[in-house]
Length: 362
Image 1 (cartoon, one colour):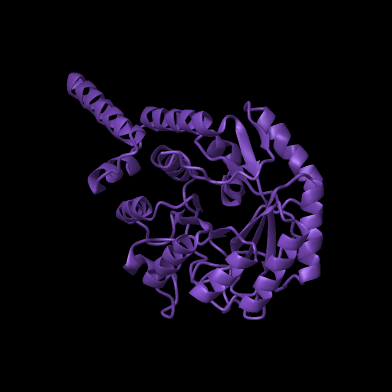
Image 2: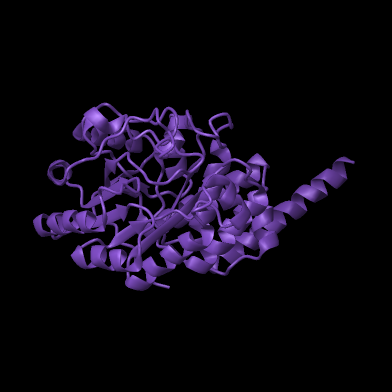
């Protein structure tokens, strides 16, 4: 019996190394291969994947971790997604929206700290419409022409995406959340569709944005097959940025009673993404820190290479409550960066203040 178990372990390790070899050649994996990797529970095999992913990240980016200044511009949203704390149906949510002047002040603070990318993220606020977003982007670009501007303001029409791009935005984050249409319908209201989300992503890439997608890990009703669908879709999309984080329930939402996603599985997915997309920009998300104080460092040691210090004014930061217990440091941004550098020092990494543009030299 012991011999049989040992043989199975050896065969499993051989299969794992075969797939690592395939990933290192940047070949796409088949469904059953992704299923095998996503179902890995053996601690030794997960550690092999993590170490290999870390090696790949260091080979392309060194030990530097890019920093982007995050500005959460509005907690109003027209959508009613079942998992999100700022869904329009949550009458208990505290709402705010930043003015253009407040956003510019955040940018000046970030520039003074040496940050070279600003990320404007918010709900799909009808008051912050396409014209307003374009004006804000244009103003930021005029004042900081050397800085990169990233937008994460949801689903818009092609004309709007083009106008933002022409105004100076060069990156756009729009997580697909889940590739499985039926699963998407379980997470979102009927007026939203997985196909429209994917169409937006295709439009963003066609316009020329560095485009970011991604998914929640452990979201309600998610299965391993759903994650396989996600990996297959990302292979097709070839995004420049990929954001993944564990699902965390939000109070006063239909899915408030669901358990949070697993940190270990999220770290495994980060490793697999780094192996398959060696040049991608992969954030160590705040959601990981909300579930595990070491979550950010674990992600970096598994291949993540982006961190987003929060520039949002401290007086409204807690109101961007998309999930429970979101870690919003009450410290001002300079202290955040000092603490970040200290934590990176402990694992042999450092802050990289460069723009961190996507470059794929395949």
